Structure formats: C-alpha cells, structure tokens
Amino acid sequence: MTFQRQWREWLTLNLLSVWLANDNYRRVDVGAREPQLAEYRIAEDARVATDAPIDLVVGLLASLLTAGTFVVVLWTVGGSLDLTRLGIDLELPGYLVFASMAYAALTTGAMIAVGRNMAHVIERKNQAESELKFSVARLRESASAPEAPGHGPQTAPIGLALSEVIRQWRRLCGQHVRTTLVSHGNTLLAPLIGLILCVPKYIHGTMLLGEVTQAAAAFAAVQGAFNWLVDNYPRLAEWASSASRVGILLFRLDRLETHTDQPPDVVDGLATERAGRQ
Image (cartoon, rainbow, N blue to C red; front, side, top):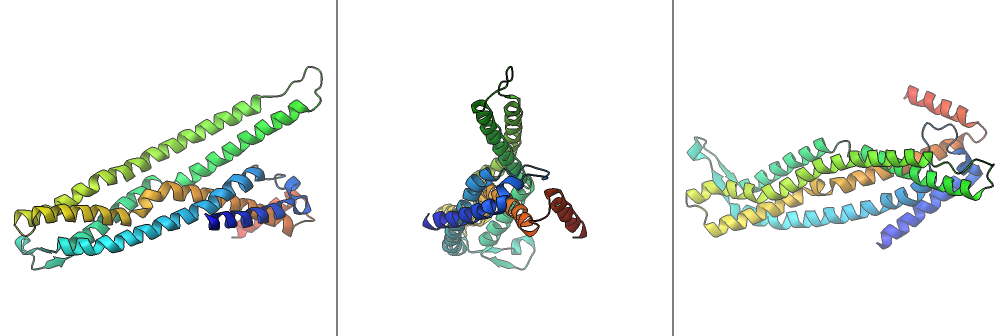
C-alpha cells in the first residue's frame, strides 16, 4: 500500500504538471474526436492504474508459491501412469501435474476468448461515467450563473449521459456473466477432474482411497495456482482500460507540448498524418 500511494502521488503530480502547463487544460479537448475529461482520468484512472498492478503482482507471487508447494505433493502422491494396458509401452511420471497444466491452459484460453473485449467495454464505461460527472458539474455551474429570463438549467445532457452509462454497464454485465461462468465453472469442476484422473489407478489397486483424496485436493490447488489469469482477468482488464485512458491523455498532452504554437486542428491533422504513415 505504501508503494501504491507513492506511485499514485508521483503519477498524479506529473499528470497535473503537464495538464496545467501552457494552459493545456483549456486546449486538450479542443479538436479531439472524444472529450478527454482529464479530471476523471487524473483522479480515478490514475488510481486504478497504480493500485491494480501491485495487487496483481502480489496475487501472482502467491500463486507461484502455491504451485511450487503443491506440484511436489501432486507429483509424489499421483505417481506415474502405466499405459501398457492401453497397448502403449510407456510409463508417464507425474501425469497429474501435466494434466493440471493442460487443464489450466484450457480454462485460461477459454477466459481469454470470452473476455477478449472486456478491457474495451470497461474503457467505454469509464468514459461514459466521466461524461456524466462532467454534465452534472456543468449543470451546477449553469445553475449558479445568472440566467436569462425564461431559460433555466438544461437537464437533457444529464439524461443522455445517464442513458449511456446504463448502456455501458449493461455491456459490462454481459462480460462479467461470461467470465464468471468460466471462473466458477472451473472452481466446481477442478476437484472432479482430479478424482476422475485418479480412478484408473484406484480401480487397479495402485492407489488407495486416501491417496486419491490427497491427489484430488493437490490437483485443485495446483490448477488453481496455474489459473491465476482466470481468477484475475476482470481486475487485469480494469487495469488495462485505466492505463490506456491515462496513456491516451498523456499522448494528447504531449502532442500539445510538441506543437505549442500550432492550433488544435493542425495538431490533430499532424497526428492523423503520422498515424497514416505508421
């Protein structure tokens, strides 16, 4: 938490210094295809971009330690699988370890497939949230300003912004449904898969019932450690979306710094031309 706090402080101060330099806070949204709304990105996206990596690294370290511990248990208790009964002159040592790795690869691939658009959906949701806050702030400013006779504060932009927020949250809900099906399905199936893989050795009397139970528990622990990405995919997508939004803001501010004397439409034209060459 100390590292997170210091990292966020450093990033926020740097963003603020660039945003306030040369009146960039006035020019950053001019000519842009999409409002940058730097206040939300500096306050909220910078927080997620610095908090999430530390949490993910700590979780990854815990998964590596768990895998290193239970792989030895699974290799020892599971033993080797004799394939001569299937007509194959081969004895596969530590077959449960390789099976857990294959199963983890399968579930990780499934999670990546169903959640491939999750980072983009979260990014659009954050943009909609920032636009809603901006609309509310503008309404308060217009309400406090002197009004022309017969012209009250306009609330229509808030209704449109709220509708967009709800629409993006609905899209995110669908993403969470799919990723939750994969992650919770994996949690329920993993012990069963471990038991099924031990059945042949138990039937032939080469593994006792207590060893079957130990092997199944170790199998669930090992594949759970290997499935770090499955368990942390939503958090990783949230970090990727916030880091992307902070990066886009920095890129926009850098363009303003590079072309300080150029009007915003010229800056956008140069950026478009550069992107076309790339």
